[in-house]
Length: 236
Image (cartoon, rainbow, N blue to C red; front, side):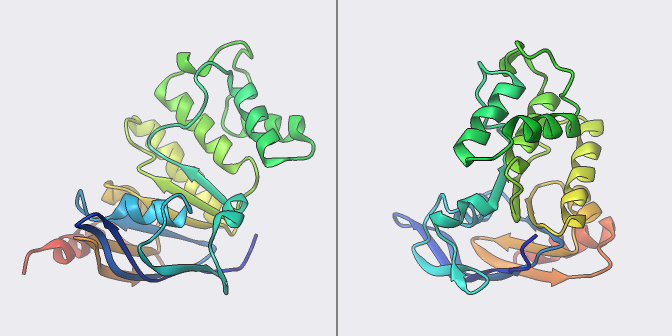
């Protein structure tokens, strides 16, 4: 895994007259889960879009190590959203084989089989299209797609949306597994308990600004995360 940090330096993002992010500066480290939380409209998804290189900031810069994070760095990024982002008419295997070809992966069949087994989809009938999968199966496939090319950075945008409690526990375990592997993991979520269970870096956004940026190497208790969040978003 790369040991490079991801640094956000004075990022602003405007949509016409609406300012989504205002002078945001943050640093994300490999081997750590950073949870980004905040009310609706706080700028969380916009920030993740910028970190994924799919959204361009109005001003400021994002650096991976000492280099600007641009489209050329997309091969270092894996993205898991609340929408699976897979082709509904293809099976799990054929979805992953397609993405493997887009990434130019060697030994694609072997890598795809490994990932399907990891997310417990290896026994799914190969002709069964993804549109017939349960929500949990689709999210497992989305994770396999995001990790297929062994990225250094993994971005999660509300990945537990619509998952049942068992699915959430599975996802938390997978996020922890990626952290332990040394990847740089950023989780955008409304679930403060899920954030507390995996994160040692907590960021609270409020009205497009950083209201809290705190690191606790030993992690956070759920009650502490809730108290920090409520204090950070309180009107003053």
